[in-house]
Structures are given as C-alpha cells and as structure tokens.
Length: 201
Image (cartoon, rainbow, N blue to C red; front, side, top):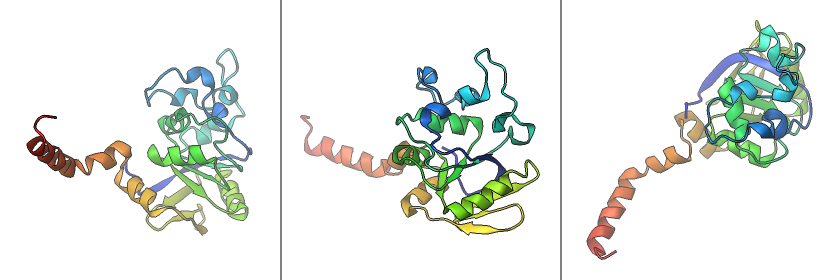
C-alpha cells in the first residue's frame, strides 16, 4: 500500500453522526473481492438518485469537494457491519484520512490495514476542523503523521495520538502482507533448516 507521511488536501465536511458502513458502501456492491473500482459507489445512496443522477447537495458531488482527500465527520464513523469494502471504497475515491470524535473499532482497524489514517480528536477540535472544511477547495488542511498534527488552512494546529506500530506501518506502506515480507529472509532460513533437519516432511 502507499506510504502515508504528510497529506495536504481538501477536507470534506460530513457532520452526520453514525455514518455506518452500509452508507459508506451499500451491500449490493459487496460482490467483488477487488480493492479497486469501489470509489464510484462510495456513499452511493447519498450521492445518487435511484436512476443514477447526482444529488447536487451531497458534499462529494459539490465542485469544491470532488477531489477531497480528507473527511471531517460526526461521531461514531464507520459503525455497522464489519465490511472491509468500506475503507476500500474510501481509498479508491481518494480519501486518505478521516477525522472524527470516535470510530467503530473494526472500521478503525481496517483503515490502518488499507492505508487510511483515522484520527480521533475532541469535539471542540473537530468543530474547528469542520468549519475550516466548510471553506471549500481553497482551504487546504494538512495532516502530518510524523508530527501527529492536523493543521487548518489558517495555521491552527491540533495534536492527535496514534499507536506507534500502526504509525510505522502507515509511514512505510506496510499492510499485513508487507509486514510478512519484511521477515522473508528469516522465513527462508527457517524453511531451509527444517528441510535439512526433517527431510522426510
């Protein structure tokens, strides 16, 4: 997966609470096991009418936010079922960071495994970031993973906590497969020693 170091981009304000995984990627799009191609169906029932027309007032359909890379959301983002397609859809759309006061545990974990940084901040900080996001495409927010800060377009900065191991994985672009491949030399050495000591296996 792609490394996450510093991200400066457009932040989309989504103040709804309890945005669940079925809202993020509705169940009818879960037939694939590919991680690509789901971005077009992100928030499908909120973005489009039943006949496929765009809903103009949905934030990601507005010109200022079509290229958003950050979402500033209401409380309890990613609740509902544990579908990993939810972070897949966000990432495929271009979202690399979601900021909220809280996340559902499984969604939170799945974000890290797929290259998305979920940031938990107090309500007062999220309120400031939400207002900054409402400024539109000219207001670029910066997320610095090394410094563990989120900075508004006018320079107001908020510190966030992140697990050191998860931080390491994001900074180095390591998913579960990547972590395993880091140990490939040790794995090969072990397999060779087993072949020599137990050739009958």
